[in-house]
Image 1 (cartoon, rainbow, N blue to C red):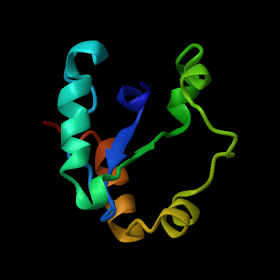
Image 2 (image 1 turned 135 degrees about the vertical axis):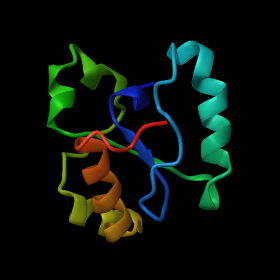
Image 3 (image 1 turned 120 degrees about the horizontal axis):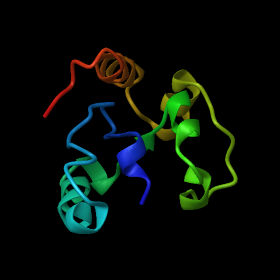
Amino acid sequence: MNFPYGILVNRKGHRFTDEAPGPVDVNYDHISRAIKDEPDGIAWVVFDQSTHDVPNWKKSIRTDQPHIQSDSLAAACGISLEGLEKNSARVQRGLHRW
């Protein structure tokens, strides 16, 4: 469960929940239900470079896919690039609070 280290976005590129409201084991069910309520019941967790500061974070990722830029991510996953970039920028500036 690595979503507390990034942001969860839906197909529109919108961040729709607080990924780390408390301990993961307490909030996993709540967040899973929030994902289910999104379009097609799908969400992506998006990380930035600061994730590399978290010890052993890669052990929680089950993929062989390399990191990619937001435009490639949006195209590959069918996510709105405009929404993704807007929400990512707000989070980086500390403007996206719950």
